[in-house]
Image 1 (cartoon, rainbow, N blue to C red):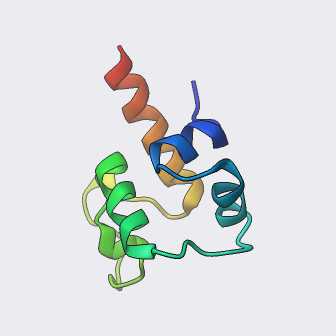
Image 2 (cartoon, helix red, strand yellow):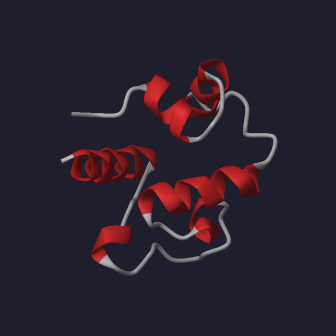
Length: 84
């Protein structure tokens, strides 16, 4: 089971249109820090990584996300685990 754009938008408390534009790299979030904090809570990946303040990838296996798709996959896994 995966997160849909609708589910991610809802989890991040934004509209679907806004989320879709972020995912397509068209418009960044207006409040990047708030979104980074929400993503950190959702995935466990440090907010500093999302906003580019970390030079290296997160060091724990759970936090090794090399791209946005990996982040979404981790979020999907956690949501499925929490729903079980």
